[in-house]
Length: 192
Image 1 (spheres, rainbow, N blue to C red):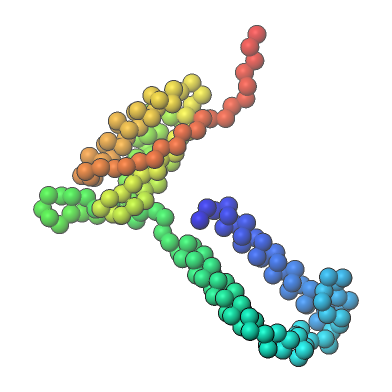
Image 2 (image 1 turned 180 degrees about the vertical axis):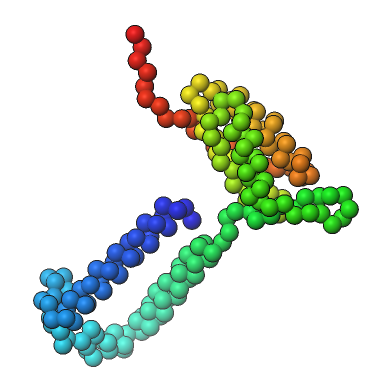
């Protein structure tokens, strides 16, 4: 789930709960209820007996309530698993030739890839994120190109040098990568 969607969803849910809780607290403390509030005063109940039993005799009521609650529970579980899922690869399995293998920290490989990619011609900054499985990692590389850089040359250098060195040093058969290129933002230059 993208971070912005997560933050907007949490913000809207939080704002709704704060507004509703503030209105309940204000009415409970004796303040006049807001104009949109459905109850009249401090001693009014949230749901009267007539409101609680109004739809009980209808055949569609309970299946609708159960379906709505089931959808709400499933969406909540989906959101919780999306929060707990690890996006970053913790370790990479390096083939040593003895059948055992060794474990390389994912962040160490990311920082090595970042430093090598940032040192290439035309690259200002680099960010690397390893995803996938530990025996088949995948790289997401974000490059910020300098103003005079040729994107095709920078992409070729990253693939031929940085990614190839990382693949060879980790003993991987392949290291698929997604490279995102951006340019450094700068002020427009005046031509005289």
